[in-house]
Image 1 (cartoon, one colour):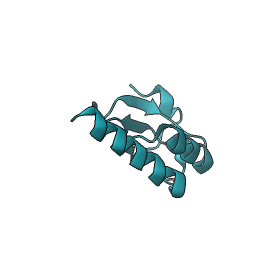
Image 2: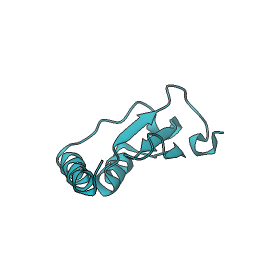
Image 3: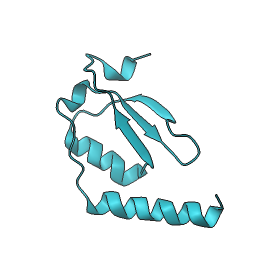
Image 4: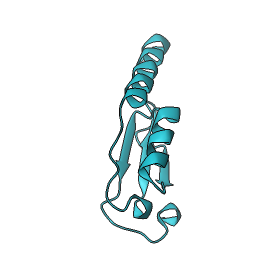
Length: 81
């Protein structure tokens, strides 16, 4: 993918997250999140958020191309292997 396309997509993802409120899963503080970019589907693992507000602030700031969360609940999700 060329640089112009990547810049365009990043801009569109920023617009989307800026104009949308993403509903957090139940018990978000016990979930492990995976975050991805165009280069790597899961670039960051073991990310956790304390609240829906914290999740949405992160999404607006970083505008990831992929985000997923665990179906399991963890006491310390940021410490998962």
